[in-house]
Amino acid sequence: MATEVQTKSSGNIAPPLDARNSWQALRAHYPQVQKLYLRALFAGDPHRGERMSVEGAGLFLDYSKNRITEETVKLLLELAEESQLRQRIDAMFSGEKINITENRAVLHVALRAPRGASILVDGVNVVPEVHAVLDRMTDFSNRVRSGAWKGHTGKRIRNVINIGIGGSDLGPVMAYEALRHYSERNMNFRYVSNVDGTDFAEAVHDLDPAETLFIVSSKTFTTLETMTNAHSAREWLLAGIGGDEAAVARHFVAVSTNAGEVKKFGIDTENMFGFWDWVGGRYSMDSAIGLSTMIAVGPDNFREMLDGFHEMDEHFRTTPFERNLPVLMGLLSIWYNDFFGAQTVAVLPYDQYLKRFPAYLQQLTMESNGKSVTLAGTKVDYATGPIYWGEPGTNGQHSFYQLIHQGTRLIPCDFIGFCQSLNPLGRHHDMLMANVFAQTEALAFGKTAEQVKAEGTPDWLVPHRVFEGNRPSNTILAERLTPAVLGKLVALYEHSVFTQGAIWQINSFDQWGVELGKALAQRIIPELENKNEPALTHDSSTNNLIRRYRQKKGER
Ligand code: F6P
Image (tube, rainbow, N blue to C red; front, side, top):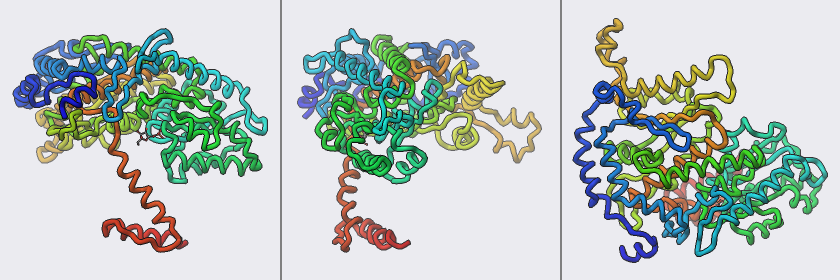
């Protein structure tokens, strides 16, 4: 079995995690670090903040407020080497089929490679194909933005609705929100993903079908939610435009890898923008799946975003691990996940434009690394992918930060801030950023009982007001939220996920775990729709729930 996997993965597999010397060394090292306090670590090294900061691809990462010593970093870097991270990176960038369970290359990095680059998949350079699609997207986006592309009745398009789910939704909607500052303000951009009819109904309730363009985004073009919404969209359009089927061609375009299904739906493949099986859904926001983003912000800004991705790709590929941002962040995540037993990571962007960034990261991180067997098919005996979650600051401070500061769980946090605001308004930005710095300081250093007492707090209240501190965080600073910086941030997390997956030796690029629920839903749908009482053969709980739903659904 192991030999078979080695051929399939076309790369060497590192020894099992437990058998790696660096892993054993980290195990031995952890109890010493576990006892250390950030307060003492900073007191003992006045330059820790400077020493444990690194800049790459224009992003600044301060990782000094982590529960680590020089020795921890050294051992984690050894772990990366011993886990053959370098070889795994090279394998990905050179188009090897590292997604062994689907026998696919993993080449989202090719989506942002410059025009002249060469990346081979099965002997074919894919970069020219990538740019050919980008050029078609550019032409189409320009036509929609300028009004040259007209709807069926001759009206210009004012509303663009992306219909997709998972990677075909979260990236586009996150990027649209993140880059709203750069977007065409005379147009509306909306995103429909949920099979809950409310999502579609609310998205279109105030729109004129004659001015609305739907982008049906689905890698497979078979996803239940997306196809259901796409069919409802077609009905809504035809009902609002006089029923002429010819209208579909002016109001629907598709983004997919499946030309056959696109045709079946009735979309002219002339109006289809393709991508490739080597682009995973959650890694697809800079493929044609980003068409709505490009229409919103314009081709130049979209290409600037791709350049930002590429800059981080190059940083990841070429920078020594000790100065490599995604590698360091990935290793720190391993440190808390596997040694401290931390179950989650909070991502806290201090920028309202990044309000969907944590939701985007949830698919990226958890669909990638929520795995419990290794590449060799054996069950892991260590924790893999942590739960990523978060909200923009400062809102989160008035909601869940309490638990991070004084709760019983260790929650490593990533703070993301910008030195310049896109909406400078009085003192707002200094106040916002003061909160970033204050939170990381409070989490790391807390407030001792002595300090609380010295403020005149009565003895009985002191324990409630003590902050233990020693809560770890990373701080990522960028100059300003530009399209390029967004690309860099996303690529930073993509490659951090890759780093973690390489160390855990799991396949970060498949998602078999979503299949069972999909298949069961397909079986249940007719049981809910059947006019006659169906014979139910589920467990007693599921049978009972289905019966109750059937009974109640018509009562109104
Ligand atoms: O949820 C599973 C999944 O396959 C995701 O990986 C993907 O992003 C999403 O469904 C949507 O798939 P598609 O683009 O094929 O509609």
